[in-house]
Image 1 (cartoon, rainbow, N blue to C red):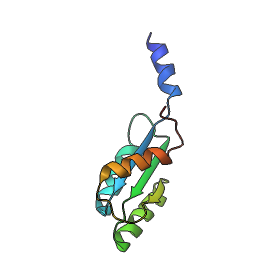
Image 2: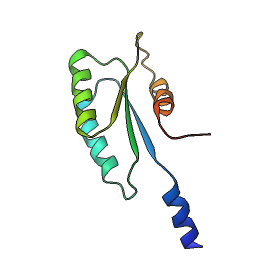
Image 3: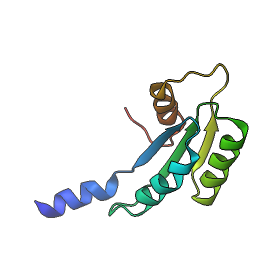
Image 4: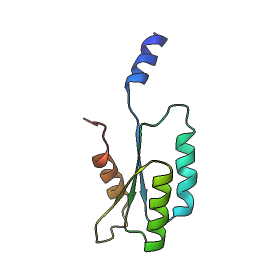
Length: 97
């Protein structure tokens, strides 16, 4: 039975969506933590909810450094992390049906 579970686990793909509104100082640690998991992540998606210009640039640079996809939400500012999460799922290559 253990072999069956391993096969199923290998067939799964993992995407991580990270909503951000500023807070670039936390993002590097979050991305490093994701990278260090026992199961490699197939896709990292950062959704920027209209951070300030400086913070947005830092978030984009961190996304590029960690080979994560970067998307910026259009105006108006939502202040809702749930929208960022939903957009992260929508931008993912994986199917969640």
